[in-house]
Image (cartoon, rainbow, N blue to C red; front, side, top):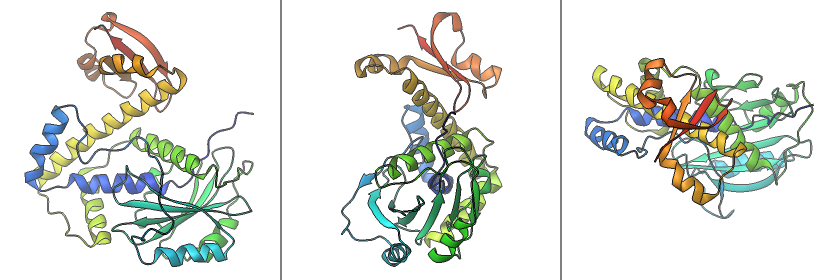
Amino acid sequence: MKTFLIVVFTVLATLAMSLVLAGFLLRWWVRRRILAAIAAGESPETAIAPSIQFVSIDGDARWQQSSTPAVFQRFVALGYVGAGRFRVPEIAGMEVVFGTHPDGTAAAIYDHVSIPTFFDVVRMATDETSAYVTTTPLHDPTHTPPGVIVVADDSLSPEQAVDLLRGLRPTGELLRATAENVCALAAASYERQIAHILTTNAPSEERMRAVGERVAALTGSEAPVVDDEGLRFAARIHRSERERALIALIVQSFLRTNPLRADEWERMRDHIVVVHDRMSPEERDEILPDPDAAKVLGRVESPVPATIYLLSH
């Protein structure tokens, strides 16, 4: 039977997207810099990360939120064993400490520079019926991939969350989280959730405004004051960044099944064109006006069906 990679710690992608949305609601003076970066083919400061990594940090390093150590110790009292502290470079200000339990479940305690401590507890399965309980203050049910069971309540204690998780039983076979695999599982989870987010409809302008206000309230910063024109600008740039991130995910998927030498990829990367099934005919014609003049390198089905072309150069 085919084993699917389970979804764990899906709060990371939702948090990242929420911070990105808030970042788009910027003062007028920042616009020129963002547009210049896009015009130059660079990622602006509000870019969506298509994937993340976990960089180990010293366990004795200063915590960003004073409440995080106490929350972690409550999980230790529940039988969870620390599996490392990590920085997530792609999500500004984010650090996380993982814990694993002898019963195969896992915990992630998030230590963000501005957002109060929150956590997930997760029971994983070898199919797509994993379950988790989260206290994230930025939960968005539309960001949850199909087949994942979620309980989101930011008032829960670690003890209550673990008790709730025991009552959530995925139908698939248990896949144990360990200190050795927890980072890989979390990174793969982020990528799958981002793929889910990017292949659904972009948020409305009013949704963007609401998220910006919510993030401002959580971080204690000034709520963004954006007029209708500024909101339309933010939505337009956000759609552009979603497309940029989706293309990056498609290329990553292609390279996993069609590995290239580093020197080969460096020669080709600036001449790659991706055409995916979510593009309109007009968009396809704009980026690839003459398909016969390009070589088909291959096709992927995930995160969205797409064909990868190499332009002659």
